[in-house]
Image 1 (tube, rainbow, N blue to C red):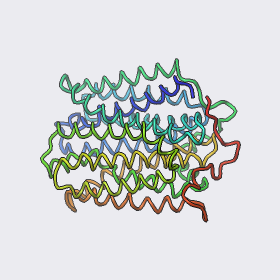
Image 2 (cartoon, rainbow, N blue to C red):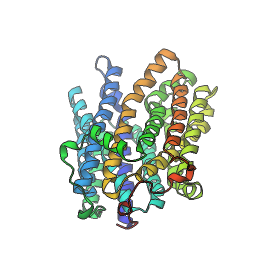
Image 3 (cartoon, rainbow, N blue to C red):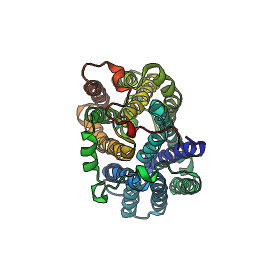
Image 4 (tube, one colour):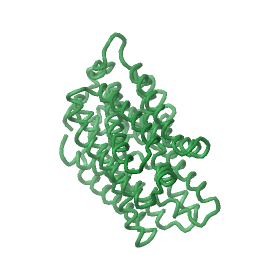
Length: 409
């Protein structure tokens, strides 16, 4: 894969999460002064994920039809417009429109994953996807800190900064990014079929994807409420405020960067993707249980650091295993189906965590998350071909030879 394309994909995912991290922690302030503000902020978070649920698979599937490059650039332009509208918003209705547009344009990650799958050999795919995961963690680490600093100038500054970054990235992609999907490998799927439900059904019908998609859903559901619920948890149990939580989320992002940017590629060569998935899921389940049981605040650093490592190993490993189930011309639709699963977790996770926090107790979301992550282990086991051991999935099972991808663009 050529370096400009690698750089663009890394920057694309980084900017996507940087913009998300810049804006999402400030949504309570954008909705401030309105009745039932906390409830409305919850609606905004669910709205973003719901729009992403429909927009992500459509855009990723569309990239199978028209190519990856135009879809990525269009997503970035849409994000730039959404953040600009948020900065200009003077009413709650404008905030709703901006958040909805941002969610609808959030197909960058799934399309970038399909681009990476086009451009890497199967044995290098987990490493490439791990690089995108590192960009995800780095953006999530830097976004809240940068947003907090910019908000000292004005509430609009973080939104305008996110808009400018997305616009610059779109221009970079327009002039630098090569196309990874040649005309001969594109599909002609009807646009009306590029919805999340038909994409999910078709993805599940690909051999061996059902149990793996279930594992992806359970894993992400287990910690989907962390961003919105953790400040409540740390405040109620340890008296943490905004500053303590900002430093903590920066630490979590750093752990994700180190894991997916450095550990995944090395460990994948040593153990294979299937063992990484099992190990990452087990570590995630144990860490979530320990978060709920932590007696002192400082213990959260090593425990949630372990959680970031576990999830950072499991997510790219599961995604790489799924990518082996589809031919090259279907990678965009597959990643769109994965994005739909992630969006369902992001829609339901914060609501589940909030209800558990209110009705069952402060640590309940983390104990429930531990159970969900543990349930993902047998789901991965079900995806193993009968009569084979764990490394059996580290081959292109069910993908014809013509479906293999090249390591070159």
